[in-house]
Amino acid sequence: MPESYLGWFKNDLRCSIFLMSLIQNLVNNEAYKGRKELTTGTTNFLRYHISVFNHHASDFGYKEKIFEDGDWKVTVLRSIKATYLRGRTENKELKWLDVSNHEQIEWAYDYLEKNKHTILKGVFFPETIEEKYELILASLDRLSNIESDDIGTEKNKGYSPRSYVLFSIKKAWDGQKQYDSKSKKNDGIIKIYKKNQAKLDKLIAFSGFTAQKMINNAIEQIYDQLIKDDTEAVDQDDASD
Image 1 (cartoon, rainbow, N blue to C red):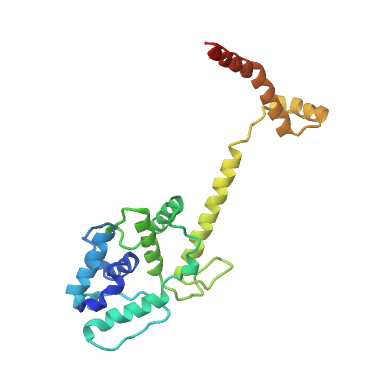
Image 2: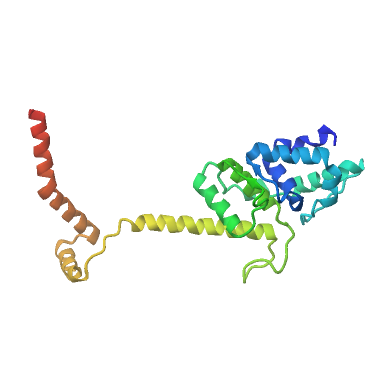
């Protein structure tokens, strides 16, 4: 395989993962740890075994297939390159994924793995958040972009396998963020004993304060009585020594 045909993917982890996934049945017993091993493994396989790749590379269900002419050794790879780069997941569909948000990337990685959408499972072992991010993108790329009337929610059909996974994962992430936000707010909730609820209601009616104001005033008063004076006394003793 001429070196000039390898440049577009040899240093690109996302592209290399995608290409390797097309022959996953041939590499299931291999193990690639991190970016360097995977990109090198993909490059070497295509450099020295292009005829094997041509014979075994699986179809990846893109809407628009592009066929290239020329040397039989490279026509399959050139066709895959053109079809893949024009049909893979667009950047505008991925803007909500932030590689600098480690919590989000870990969550998305786990979501795809749990729902069996991760490619090269048991073959490629990412070592960093950035590598997990590239694996997420390649796994989404691997899904077909052909719409179907059978794919979607009960009331909204017509998704492609890829667009529905993107819809589902973003919806799940938004739901997770709302849950986390609500949980943080609930962390500040103080439960009132049932026997004290009537007393609190009377105090609110008498003072005109809200329950929140009433409770915070009580906390400040008790703090001043039990802790503040003692703390100030200790500070004064320390200063006089």
